[in-house]
Structure formats: structure tokens, C-alpha cells
Amino acid sequence: MPMPSDTAAETWIRLARAYGVAISGIEQALSKNDFPPLIWYDILLELDRAGEAGLRQYELEDALLLKQYSVSRLVERIEKKGYLKRVACTSDGRGKRLIITKDGETLRRRMWQVYGPEIHRLFDQKLTREQSDEMSRLLGRLIDGAE
Amino acid sequence: MPMPSDTAAETWIRLARAYGVAISGIEQALSKNDFPPLIWYDILLELDRAGEAGLRQYELEDALLLKQYSVSRLVERIEKKGYLKRVACTSDGRGKRLIITKDGETLRRRMWQVYGPEIHRLFDQKLTREQSDEMSRLLGRLIDGAE
DNA sequence: CAAGATTGATGGTTCAATCTTG
DNA sequence: CAAGATTGAACCATCAATCTTG
Image (cartoon, rainbow over all chains, first blue to last red; front, side):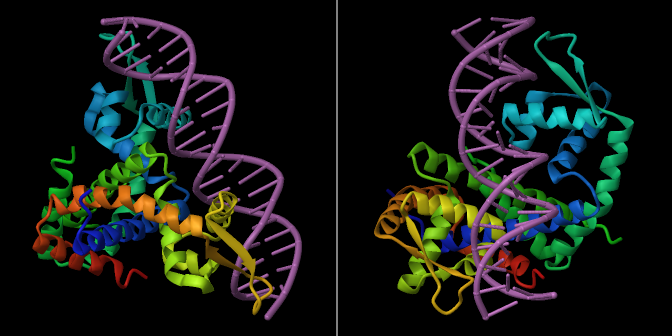
């Protein structure tokens, strides 16, 4: 089996570490301000973008790389808090449409007030615009053709 | 509050996505081969490097960015499988020393036979040596001065 | 049968409280 | 009291089985 170069191994270690630093900073900031986890923000953002038509659950799976049962249970909790509603899909009796509520839109905006500054602190303050663009470009290579 | 630039936001999105692609590929490969999760490898590697002296639990916390109770419970499970042993610390009655066993060393090597090729596939095949070095350098900027 | 979604059971993670020793 | 570590309870994630409709 082909083993990784030292460079590749080091890059992976640093990628994991950088992700860890960022995600724990963000989750901690959200939690400290009595907000739900970041995944709730991601879901609300997708639904916000989808507008009145909403999204099917499997579309959320694809967009956020989640499992079917994960979406099912996350969405159940978010709905219970009133930030989205699940309505029967007219064109496909098996499906539900997920639609963000007014409260959901408000929550998303309020979470951004905490989430945004964390990104600023973790990225804008540590990389120049050029460095950030370059990293973005390189990360794109890891993502595209991921299959 | 200072909000992030579009570039920073995009870089963070891609970092999270690239991490997600890599970690799920690795965990899936390990699981498919009946191996435990990646964190077991990380722990065994730290203990392997520490040699006969072993490590204190709080040293593992620092090295792997884990919580005290996480280490406590992970180590309990790994010990139960016989891959490490916990011995009382002679110099500090509060502490335990964690020492890898022969079986633990073997497991770590066998996991690397699956883990290594995944890193190769996910990094070596998608980035040139120069690109990987450059990404590593930029990621270093995100990690250093994380506090 | 396949696709979309849900659920019971299980196992792991997390919080807060606790225990023990320095 | 602080540091190292553990634990009960609650919460969340995961697997496999299931249900419903195309």
C-alpha cells in the first residue's frame, strides 16, 4: 500500500489541529452566549437561503454532509424549539419540506453576531488577504474530486 | 463587533469541509477494517513516543486537546482492551502513568497500514509537494498564537 | 424493490459534582 | 484550596430495523 510522504502527513496533522482550534473557539463562544451548536446555524442558513420553498431533508444531508438519521433528529429538536417547521410535501407523499420560521431567522442573525467575530479573530487576524486566498485555493484542491 | 471578510469566511468554510472529507474517509477506512476510531491511534502514538516512562493523563490532554473526563473514559476503554496499562505514579500519589503494551504497539502499527494509505490518497494525490508545504506553512499561522 | 424519513437500542460525549492527594 | 482524575446523569450520535410512499 502506498504510504504518505512526510509532507502530506504533516499537512494532515496541521489541518486537523487548525480545525480543532477553530471549531472549539467557535463552539465555546456560542455556548458561552447561550446559543445552540454551530450545526444549528448551518441548517438555519441553508433554510434561509432556500426561502419559502424550503428544503427536503435529503437536500440538507447533501449540503452539510450529514446522515439521514442525523438530519431527522437534529431537525426534530430545532422544530421543537420553533425555529423551523416541517410541512408535508405536496408533490411527494414520502417527503417533508423544511421551512425556517421568523424566530429561526432571528436566531440565525443573532448567532452570526457571535460566530462572525470568531471567524474574524481566527482567520482575518492571522492571515493576510493574499494568504487567505491562497489557503482557500489549496483547500479547494482537497475538496474537489473528493470521491 | 468586527465581522469577517468574505475571504476569511470562505477559507473557514473550506477548512471545515476539507477536514470533514478527510476525517470521514479515514474513520470509514478504519471502521471498515474493524479498527477502533482514530483517537485511539493518536493516543497510542503519543504513548509509543513516550516510551517506558509513559505519560500522565494531563499530558495527553495537552497533546491532543482533550478534556480531562474524555481522557479518563477513553483510556478506561483502551485499557480494558489491553492496549495500555495504568500504573500508579510513584512521585505523585494523585496521578497515573499511562504505558503502552506490546498489543498496543502492534495495534498502532496495524492501524497505520490503513491510516497511512488514506493520507496518501487524500493529500499526496491532490497536492504537489510544493502545494502541500505551502498549505502546511499557512495552517501553521492559524495554529500558532491560537491563544 | 428503492427512496425518504423515523425510531428503539446502544454506545459515546459532556456537564457538574465528587474524590483524593499536594 | 488547587491539581489530577473519576463518575452519575443527561444528552447526543450511531446502527440497524422499520415504516410509508413512488
